[in-house]
Image: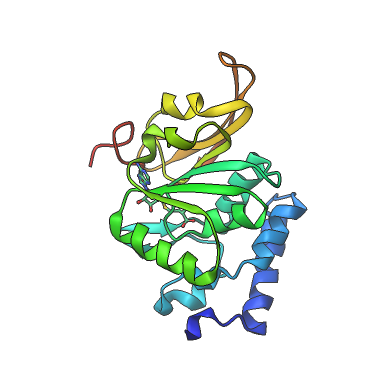
Length: 219
Ligand code: SAH
C-alpha cells in the first residue's frame, strides 16, 4: 500500500524528468503533462522505486521491462492521441504506456503475451481505478474482434511489420512500431492514407525487448 503514495519528493523528481524529456526533444505539451501526472513509481517493484524517475528502462518481472520514459513519450507523440481515439497496444507489460494513453483520453485495448504479467497488471490497474480493455495472448495478429482502431502502438521490437496490424487500422489511422534486429530497432510510423496506400516515416536508435509470437521472433 505504501507504494501508492505520491509524495512531494516523487512529484519533484517527476517534474525534473519532464524537463529532461523536453530537453531531449519531446515537444507535445499534452504528452509531457500526462507524464507529469502519472506516478511512474506505482508501476515499479518496491526494490526499484528509487529509480522510477530516471530516464531508463527497468525490469518488471518475467524478463520484461517498463520502457524508458523518453521512448514512451516519443511513441505517444508520434501517435498524436486525440480524446476518444480507439487505441490498440501490443505489449501491456507494466501498464504504464497504456495508462498514459488512457490519461490522454483514449479508449485503450491492450494485449500481453506473458500470462503472469497480464494477471498482475490487470489486478494492479483495477486497483488504481484505471479502466481499459486488457487481453492475454499473442498480439502479432492484432485484436480483430474490436478492429478497426484509430491508432496502434507496439511496445516490443518486431522483426517485420505484421500485416494484420495495418489491416486493423482505420483509414487515416497511425501505427507506431519498433522494427529491426533483436538488439536495436528504428521506430516506424505508418499512416494509412487509404485501404491500399500507406506513408512510412522512420526514426533511428531504439532498443526494446523482442516481440514474440507468430509474426514475431521465435523464442
Ligand atoms: N508497454 C509496456 C512495455 C513492456 S515491454 C510498459 O509500459 O510497461 C514489452 C511487452 O511486450 C512485454 O511485456 C512482453 O511480454 C510483451 N510481448 C512480447 N511479445 C508479445 C506479443 N506477441 N503479444 C503481446 N505482447 C507481447
